[in-house]
Image (cartoon, rainbow, N blue to C red; front, side, top):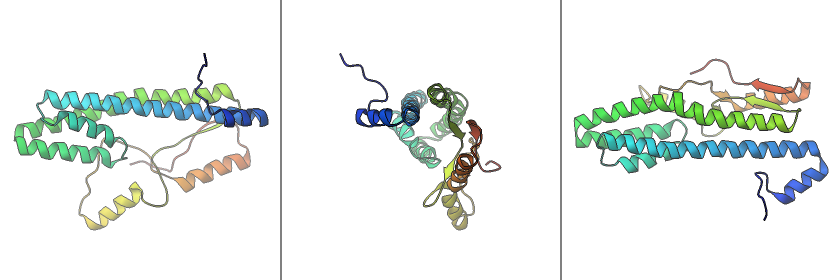
Length: 212
C-alpha cells in the first residue's frame, strides 16, 4: 500500500530534495503551513454553518438553514461578508415580526462575541501555531513574520472605506474586531531589509503602527 504524505508533489519534491536540502525543507514547511491554514479555515466554515443554523432555528427564523450557509460563505468575504448576511437576516426578520427582528439582533451580538473570543482563537490560533511549529521543526534557518489586515494596490478595504466616506455621512461596518491595517509594500520592505541585513532568524511581528 502507498502511504500519502502532506507534501506529495513528487516531481517538485524530488527536484528540491536533490538540489538543496535547505530549499526542500522550506518548501515542505510552507506546504504544511498552507495545509494547516486551509484545514483551520474549513473548520471555521463548518462551525459557522452549524452555529448560525441552530441559533436562527432556536429563535424561529424561517430561513435558518439558508442563513447558516450564507454566514459560512460570508467568511470568504473580508469585512463585508458578515454585514451582508446580517442585513439579509435582519430585513427578513423585520418583515416577519418586530420580536423576531430583536431576537435576530441578539443572535448577531452573542455569536460575534463567541466567534471572536472562542472559535477563531481556538481554531485559527491552533492551526497557525501548528504551522509555525512545523517550520521550526524542519529548519533552524527561518523567518516568520506575523502580520495583520493586509491591503495593497487595487481594490481593498481601506480604499473602499475612503470612497464610502466621501459619498455617505456615515459608514456601517462591524465594530467587534480590532487590528492593525498593514500596507503590503511596507511589509515587503521589512522582509527585504531583514534578508538584506541578515538579522537573526526567528519570529517577528510586522504591522503598521496603531490599530482600528
